[in-house]
Image (tube, rainbow, N blue to C red):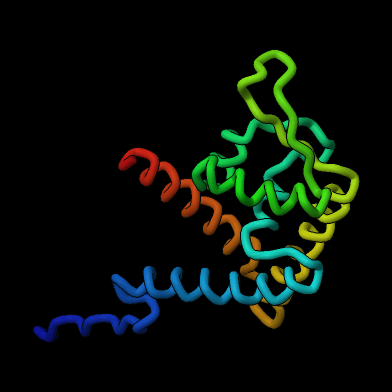
Length: 159
């Protein structure tokens, strides 16, 4: 019988505790930079893609405050973003028919086309990111969605 203690398992630097945060920051920066380059090709700026995707594709009106919640920014920030999109005739703002204090936003036909372009672009960028990767893309998507839900909920509790 050997009295030697088991050797500690070696952990790669990428898997060490505390390494997730720098990786998440880097992934976010790189993916945003890649998206920004591609968005420029279709005439959009950073954040406008997220806002267009938060709007209903069928043209149903959405409250500005709900848009702000969906894209996780203040309503005043959404309002500024909408100014630019409205100038390009991608969205239309109007008052809620039942409560005129509420501002509703809908996609125009040009906005629906731009939203479709963004959806296609997102799919292309995602395919580009996962090109030459193992078959773990679906697992990664699922884990990323779970992590996003978890962090969003924990952040909501802190606010």
